[in-house]
Length: 158
Image: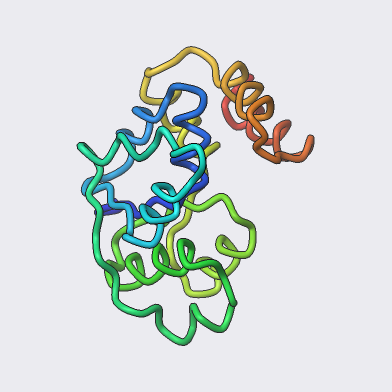
C-alpha cells in the first residue's frame, strides 16, 4: 500500500478549477506538494485557486532531483515530485504529464494522474459517476484524447 503522495501542478489546477480539489484526499497520506510546484501555482496569473489548499496539503522542500530524473529534462515541478517519490519509495507520484509519467515508470515509481484520482474516488463511494467531471476537465482546458476518455470511463464502469 502506498505511503504518501506527491502532487504536481496539473492535478491541483484542474481539480481546483472544477471545484473538486478535495478528491485528492483519497490519496495516501501525507499528501505533499514540493516547493517548486507550489511556487508555480503561486506565480500563476491569476493566482491558482489550488494555492488555497495548502492548509491541508503539506508543502515540502525537495533536494535536487537525481541524475536519472534530470536526464528526462522535465519541468521543475515534475522533477521535484519524482525526486520526492524516489526518496520515499512507498509513495506515489500524481502527474498528468506524459513524459513525467514515462520517467516515473522507467524508474519503477508508482504514478497516477487526475483521472486515476477520479476513478479511486468513485470506487470509494465519493461520487456515482466520473463522466460529468471528465467533461468539466475537458471544458477547463485539460487535454485528454478520446481514447483515454473511453478507457477511463470503461475502467470506471461507465
